[in-house]
Amino acid sequence: MKIAITVLSGWFFFAAVRPSIAQITEEDYFFSTAMTRFFQLDESFRPALRVIQEYDDNIGLEGGDLQEGSWKTLLIPSLTLNFPGERTSLLLDYTPAFVYYFRRNDELDIDQDASLKFTHQFTSRYWIYINDIFLRKETPQDIRRPDIPQQRTADYNFNLAEFVFGNQLTEKFSWMAKYNNERFNYDRSVMKRVFNRTGNIGEGGFRYEFNDALRLNGSYIYRHEDYDQAGFDYYSHLSRMGCNFRIARGFEAQVWGGYQSRHYDTGQTLTGPYAEINLAFFARDDIYFNVAYWYKIEDTYEFIHRGVWENGFTFNGHYKFLPKIALVLDYLGLFSYYPSSLIAGEELVSANETFWRLDLGIEFHVLEKTLLKLGYRRTENSSDFPGAAYFRNQVYLEAAQTF
Image 1 (cartoon, rainbow, N blue to C red):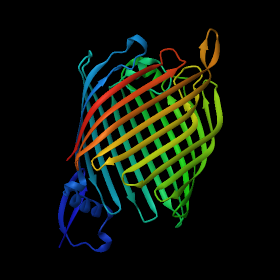
Image 2: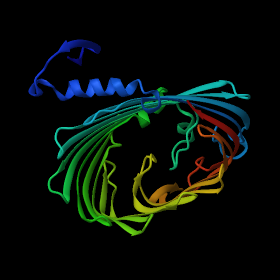
Image 3: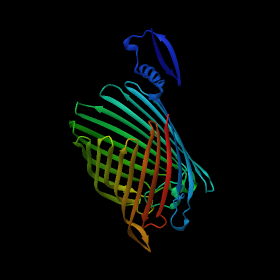
Image 4: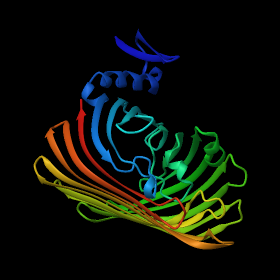
């Protein structure tokens, strides 16, 4: 006798049945295997906790003499539920962050991150992927492009829904179709009027596997951004081709090149080349790094001319120089040029901006699931736009425990 598990209106039902092979549905199989694996706690139930004590010398991300420093305590629990199946899987994750300020009027901010990921293989050649991410942000956020400074401290909700369909057409050739929906909602009415928006993004892409070391990629992306405020909308096109290449064992490169255009309701149009390069090195267990560069058109919320040419650079490195001690380094740099965007007197002139953030730390792996980290973070925004420039320094001690 076999035990089958079915689901109806969110409830599980157990029944003793003797089904034929044709009667065993994928859903029955998924839930039965998922429930079995769920009770193997190490695999399917993963709670974690991070506690951070930090000093931040610019808690409001203000410029000039307005900046204020404070000690902060961050409590960040995390809960992950994983329901794996042979062909169907479901993952749920929820991570709130409680941020207590020792010196500020509203002494507690609560951020919330939640995600749901679902995958299903109809056959060995057809599959779908659904992903939904919800963010609630109350802590001041780094805004990496010029805007009114009040946006950095504005509370908002963000939701991303992603739907992907894929097909392995031949042994070497596969293609996919993707649709994303993004939504920003701000709490304050003045921010709602200017920054509430909905993004609709469609993408079609393919890849061709020449061999284990070389893969050819191509895609086309269309994006339409719909602002609640009339006249702020835009649409964009991006066509690109690229390849993934294994240079040596543990050393891989990804390269993209293409053409892009962005068209704003204000009348501004930007067109030009697109480039992206990513290098990853992980040949040794004690050291790995990732370097990336891109050149693309991005959007700013400056109200007259919106487009920006952006050069971006990231570096992530990890070096374990002792069995339980490692150095980590993360760097992000954005170098932006805005043609005819800054009002000087009665004319529009070009403007520049540089945003960078460096995070340097040392990690102590006390136990297999216990980590201590001592870190320093420097964030700086140098901008020609009034009120957009600021900097801050953060020193922190973090303890992380996975259960």
